[in-house]
Length: 223
Image 1 (cartoon, rainbow, N blue to C red):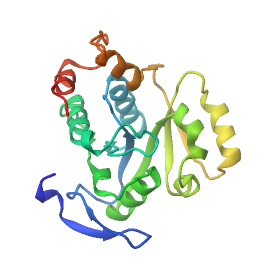
Image 2 (tube, helix red, strand yellow):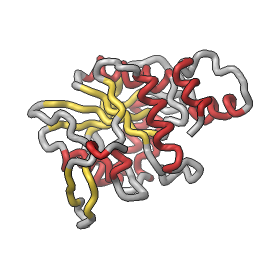
Image 3 (cartoon, rainbow, N blue to C red):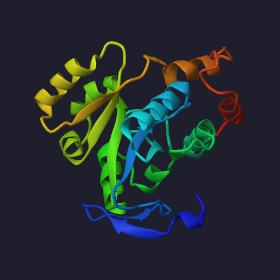
Image 4 (tube, helix red, strand yellow):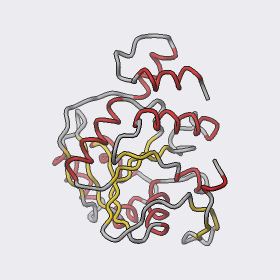
């Protein structure tokens, strides 16, 4: 991480001091959709989901937020963060409105989605944030760390996943988290899993164009 990225400090609600990443645009009425994940590797499904969300929600940008050390995936850690970030940057390849942001690398470990949202709202006070996920993740939302606070802080845009109809899933989630605000986005069912792709790549098997060649070049170079 370059020194010019570490431009100021802030303090979270627990009193912990940590650095804020390099300043990004923060203006009144600016809207940003947060899209977190391990992106190991990022693929066409991620790109389609973000692009369609950008078009349908009217936000100014979608921020891809690779997770350095996801609490639910112990086998993925900080040592691969820069590599995964580079793959995301390569996937986006300068697409307007889609940005890779290493924001979570500035947060204490472990970093949960609620921490990320809290930091965004604290660091970029003029920007209105929302959160992008799939219906499969929406179904798991009540089990997330700080789920009640997260659902109070931010609204969700949700892409469909097979086996998790939006309306039914939302009803179940709202029976547990009454503050959840969620809006569906329309997109084809692309049930592409990074885990499945990673397993095939590890065996030198074809991934059928689901990962662009430029991203595969970064993958093959390794962390």
